[in-house]
Image 1 (cartoon, rainbow over the protein chains, first blue to last red):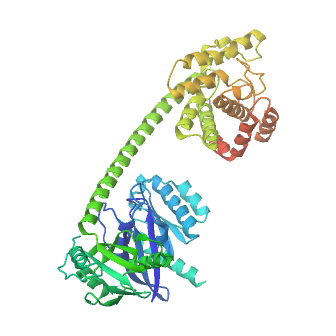
Image 2: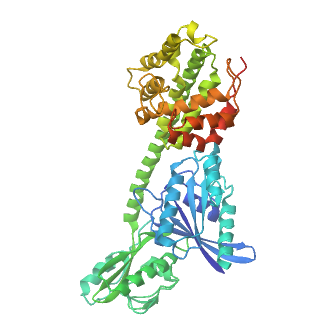
Image 3: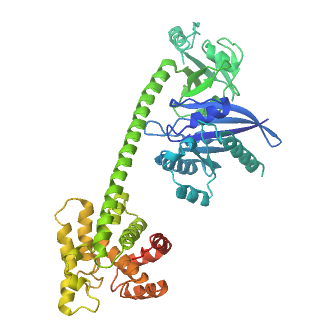
Length: 168
Length: 361
């Protein structure tokens, strides 16, 4: 079985752990539980013809209390940069983290995940900004850990892309 | 998450039996590195360590840690580098949550250290200390989230008040401009064009918002010009033109004596929007950057909008002709650098023009 390490990166309270929990255990909690340190979850999936074990590293949210260690990315097939659509500054924080990772580890595949699609009316990350990122070649997923919409597709499309990238 | 302090026998260590006793009382295991992945277990194993290895070993056993824990595998790479360097001190893994087969997770932390040229690995169950850290961070982040939500609410309400103020200002300005034959759409367009230039210049959001409302006030002083001059169909005499020029000073007087940034900007614009870059303008004959930048911006967009639209005294002029004429005025009538910025955002300017068409009179 192929093992793929994916890291969840982003500001605090954007829903990284909730996305993992929704994907791995199909559950969601309304209450915000902060993550301290690193939590690793595994899920075995079939991606095309390949059987893959996804090792999902859920990293503590970035803020003034905790900083990301770029070395966590070592051996990763890529990382998912999570932002909360209802909090515009979390996108800036995510893009800043991506720059930090690239500076420390070199280019690594990543996708931007805009979470909380169930609260679309409250979104502060606006379409022109999203379009501009897509034009720059940023791979983007919109999903909701709460409703589950787009979560499985996000993890598995990204993993499949990473797998193909590794094979080529 | 709970700490599991198992009753463990202390292993006699080279430093003396007391140290083994102390270590036995802590929820940690100490290992000495022998080969790459092989370690000598110096303390009795804890329950969580046994779970991690999958087999129960006793102190003195040789164990391989490779594959025991995904996070530990990752850390052992850093630890190996540290031991290889041979520098004194220690390197810590940072906390991680290790899943047990029953689903419970233990908060662990690893430390690699070097003592008397021997490599040691300490694995510690953080237990209560971790729970306490989580509580502190949870509380701090909950507080930050509440602050963020409050800030958002303040911002939302401020925007709502500003929109209401803008709407009132636009309606009053449109009414005043109608005396001069100007339309409400012209008033709105001037504000939006000017704001687009402010945005292209990288101004702060609040300054752009002020410009969007202040720019349409540029001709507010015309309220003090007699109808006979303001609405005269033919050319003005020299004396009439001098009176007409007073609209800049009248407007500045109307908007003056205020500490509100929006009104301060509006006063500058009203007073100086007829100044020319080369000093031929009025009322103060300012030159170049002596003219406030907001007034220099309005000078450009006011001329553009007046030329491309129909007026009672002239048909609309095709945009290429307007731009060619204004190009000749750059460095003479207009700030050339700002005119370049204006040209750079022409698509936005055109979109504003097309969105706010003059209403039928």
